Image 1 (spheres, rainbow, N blue to C red):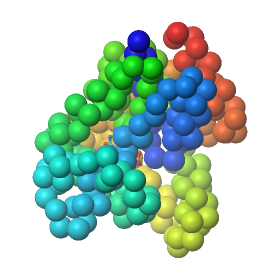
Image 2 (image 1 turned 60 degrees about the horizontal axis):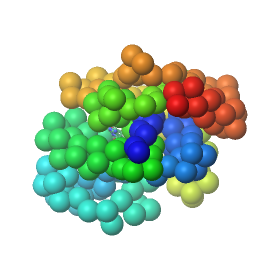
Image 3 (image 1 turned 135 degrees about the vertical axis):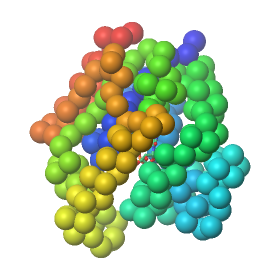
Image 4 (image 1 turned 180 degrees about the horizontal axis):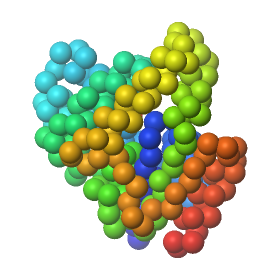
Amino acid sequence: MSFAIAIDGPAAAGKGTISKAVAAHFGFAHLDTGLLYRAVGAKVLDGVDPIEAARSLVAEDLENDALRTADVAQAASRIAVIGEVRAALVDFQRAFARRAGGAVLDGRDIGTVICPDAEAKLFVTASAEVRAARRHAELLGRGAEATLQEVLADVKERDARDAGRAEAPMVAAVDAVLIDTSSMSIEAAVTAAIAAVEAAR
Ligand code: C5P
């Protein structure tokens, strides 16, 4: 039996943490689909053609710590507007969503394009300021150098590109449960997410 949970939303809203916790709670597999776009973005920064990079992606490409940098995130969001890049990544994501035993996929278009028939859909968001502050703390924790202003500008630029693109824009599915984590602890957000999935079971 398959059971797909789609978790979409902007950068640093808490999607990743919530997705991992929800997957662990239900014993489901988890796919961070942002890693697919980041892996393509990283290859493009190395001079590879984006469509070629998307078509030749392999699982090992996703296990790279260098995918977590701000430069790769921006490169990911630039190649994510290309229809052929997105198309090359669809089958892998849909197969993952329908694997036996259940799956959690997090991204921008999971509930709308990749898995519109997902059994549970969440849209996790937070204000740009709160998200930038979280991302800033995370970057400093990893020893990266950036000011809060730079991170906020980065977050806003990526939001605008992801929400404004023609192909699979970031938008809440009409049937998604909205979770605004701006003034929530991570524990409260995880509890709300699990409750929303339970309600759909
Ligand atoms: O989630 P993450 O910040 O790692 O995603 C990096 C970029 O990949 C996003 O800014 C977005 O442009 C793109 N992306 C996407 N569709 C997804 C997941 C990520 O377009 N399902």
